[in-house]
Image 1: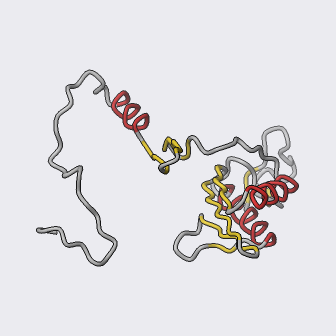
Image 2: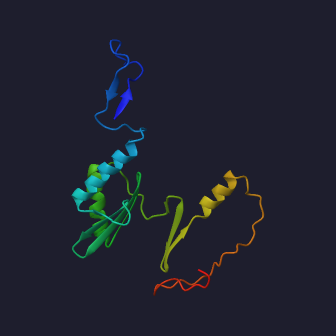
Length: 164
């Protein structure tokens, strides 16, 4: 990676020369890729494997326990089979990278997460409201949608919905 000479540090003998960077700088186009490569390489040294279906998903298997980590730029969701495995992985990550544990998942990538005894509810209500506000449509009247909101999905084969 190369960049022009920074203001105040221009070599007067060679004003047209450029600088070769030893490492990527925050704000450059290459910085997110370099960060992801660095973090992914560290995860692999800890024993995580990159999922074949999604390069942002990492899987860790230890004895009978499994942990999953989802990485999006610098946002991380980490879940594990047991609380002890989760603490062990957090400690290992915090030893190499400055990070903090924000506790149980509440928001991730504009998705609100609500946990209950019956399962997990994912919602993008606030995201939709923000989009309406940006478009100046918060005062508009809602209308029904032609989409079937009560469709039953089956896990035993191809889609059997008529017309699909």
